[in-house]
Length: 128
Image (cartoon, rainbow, N blue to C red; front, side, top):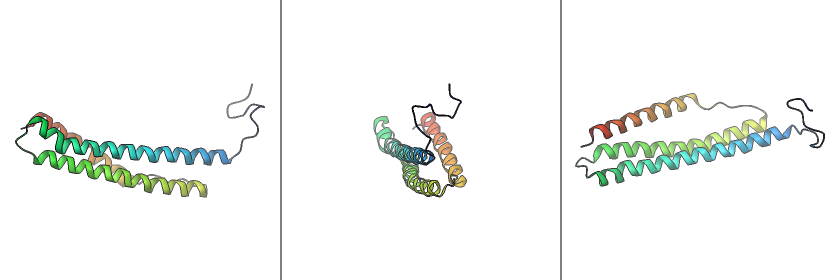
């Protein structure tokens, strides 16, 4: 029986490059997650700004438009930051380093997400 972290006799030697390869592939998956999040947010933007007011026969359009525009901006930021993050992580891995996510952007995304959630709650409860 082998110890944790060891490979069995049939698997051959552990190549240290495997770690970099796996990290780069994980980086690609994370990049695609940023895209999925961005596209989902753009879909929410369209629904909030155009679909919901139309099916609810709302007499007031502007709050839905504002929320939709902010969701759209959030989606664009997610897609753009995903590429920035993908390239910076790839460079760092190739240098044998690590790069943290930008804490200011992460805080900004969190604050915007919370505010958008609260705005949606207000629209749901007080929808004209």
